[in-house]
Length: 150
Image (cartoon, rainbow, N blue to C red; front, side, top):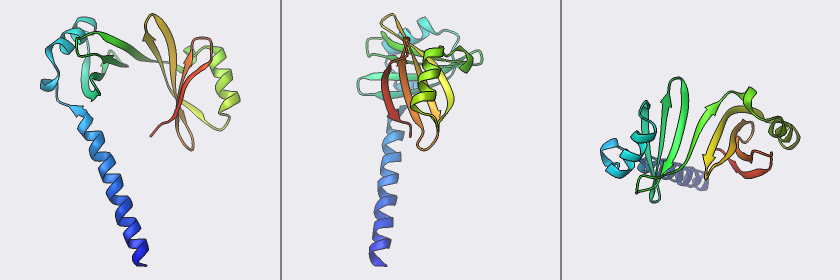
């Protein structure tokens, strides 16, 4: 019994530690460097509900324009590394829909985003299931990245 209690306490501590690390990534607007803020506002002047996170040396920002969710990764000099926006599931290319049906038959498409990086468009698809997945596809339907979404 003592071992079970100790294991429970250990796992609780690990879970709280992971959550604390996630919170540390969130930053207040006032802590965003001016160059980053300038790069953001120059491109996304109409953004609202803006939230910032620090990821290594870069800054990830999530926001809304109109009723559409957006995000961008901006480096410390204010250059947009990549940007994404939510799109309706109906706009997902057929090649990608077919790949999802084949590779993840037990998962359901939740959210779909286009991602623009270096002049190329890819699609990030959040899949609901057990476990949830986040899969990025090239415009041709090839998997670029596949990871568990937690």
